[in-house]
Amino acid sequence: MLSIALLGLLVVSAAASPSAIKDRTGRVVHKRTTEIVQLYAYGTNISGLPIYAGSDNLAYLATDDAASNFTAVTWTIDTTGTDAWTVSANTTAATNSSTLSSGSTFYVVTDSSSDDSFAQAGFVSDASDAPSGATTTGIVTYGPYVMILEDTDDKDTYVSEFWATQSDTDGVWTLMWNEAGTAQDNSVPVTLKTTAPVV
Ligand SMILES: *[C@@H]1O[C@H](CO)[C@@H](O)[C@H](O)[C@H]1NC(C)=O
Ligand SMILES: *[C@@H]1O[C@H](CO)[C@@H](O)[C@H](O)[C@H]1NC(C)=O
Ligand SMILES: *[C@@H]1O[C@H](CO)[C@@H](O)[C@H](O)[C@H]1NC(C)=O
Ligand SMILES: *[C@@H]1O[C@H](CO)[C@@H](O)[C@H](O)[C@H]1NC(C)=O
Image 1 (cartoon, rainbow, N blue to C red):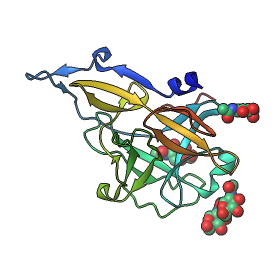
Image 2: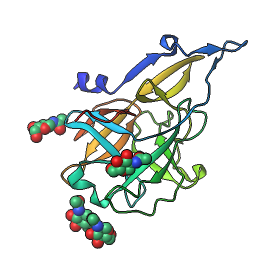
Image 3: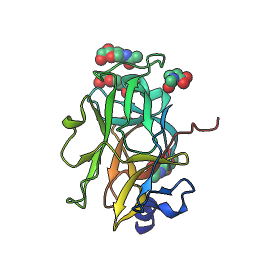
Image 4: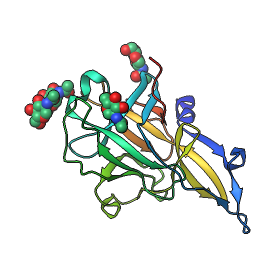
């Protein structure tokens, strides 16, 4: 169980980043970069599944066969995490549209005051509508990997604690953030990437 838990915690020091440029106060300066991408999740039995929005505006992973009840999304991301990441429905994908409003903001519940927080990620039309403990900024890319940049002890740390929980429907998982990185029922750690699976 411990090894499963550790797998979910991917931490990389900012010192390893070649793009870490410091300003005069020593803070890392990140050049804002906007990209339009699709995001895919990878983990045990999850070989590069796209992230979808459900009709409840929560985030799901689904196989092609199970995706018809979900909305495929196109992401506009700020790779430096300064701006929130937004999505709009990809209308060319053969899936149902939800109540998702265009430009909805992605959030992840990372509340550190509740150490055992294990909550589903989702989308809100306005960042202020995100649930308590949620963050909409600080979501960055590290190479192709999606991570959250945390300022711990004045040091930038890249953290990925995305997990997927099997739903009652075959081929459907909920996309979670596992703040403590502890083992969870019917769940596996996943990495999110901007790169599609090789077919
Ligand atoms: C992965 O799939 C196999 C075959 O269906 C199954 O036996 C196994 O329990 C699955 N593993 C996880 C972590 O879901
Ligand atoms: C889509 O949702 C309907 C109604 O909830 C359900 O009956 C159906 O099985 C779902 N389809 C898939 C592919 O999950
Ligand atoms: C889309 O949603 C409607 C109503 O929720 C449902 O009746 C229909 O079967 C869905 N279409 C697909 C392709 O799943
Ligand atoms: C929209 O969905 C289609 C079909 O899945 C895909 O080929 C295309 O790359 C997507 N477009 C964008 C901009 O994400």
